[in-house]
Length: 163
Image 1 (cartoon, rainbow, N blue to C red):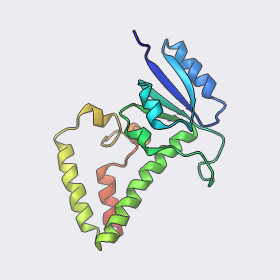
Image 2: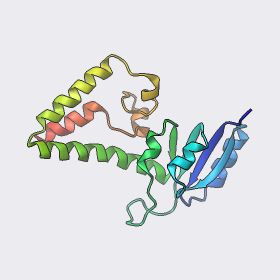
Image 3: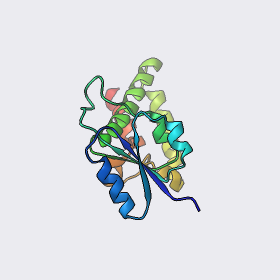
């Protein structure tokens, strides 16, 4: 019987060992892997969850370690601790920038607002749990804190404010 695996991705934090030990104390096998490991290699190991252990390098520095966005799309829960939580925050900011860029390209924010409103209508019918787990559409303030994407409502409000 294969063991459940939690990967602890080490970005140089002094807490990676502690995190891995705490996971093991919960009777779940964990391994520490370097942040340079390709996402495909991580996913090939079929982890049940991935913990990003933030490092001492500032996420604002030009040479700070990067996280491959494919990690968040791999279908495995990802939890960032310390500086890694800031990386997820930057992912949300990218959504707003992409929306503004699309509005500029189209010459108006109206087409983007319309498209997002249609997506919001799809959400009104209820989301599958697999999507809710990524925090893409959640009303909870706590869920928003760890969400990797801003809510559709927030994206529409930002576009309306820029009009």
